Image 1 (cartoon, rainbow, N blue to C red):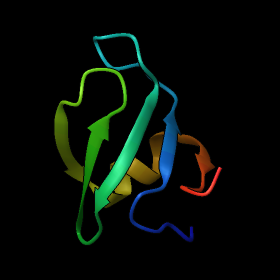
Image 2 (tube, rainbow, N blue to C red; image 1 turned 60 degrees about the horizontal axis):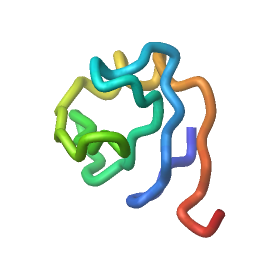
Image 3 (cartoon, rainbow, N blue to C red; image 1 turned 45 degrees about the vertical axis):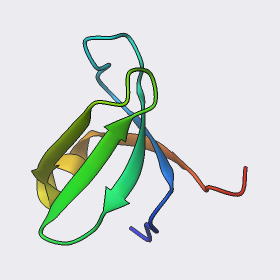
Length: 61
């Protein structure tokens, strides 16, 4: 999976605020995601994140 910083990830499950879109702010063993709805930041393991990604929107769109 080719991800870049700033990409918008559409996840399978929604954040408690209702948004399914997250901005990718850190890559590595863990991914740091910022919720596009409430700006809450979450760090989750890369493998778990890759399984729960439904779609990827580039930051240019």
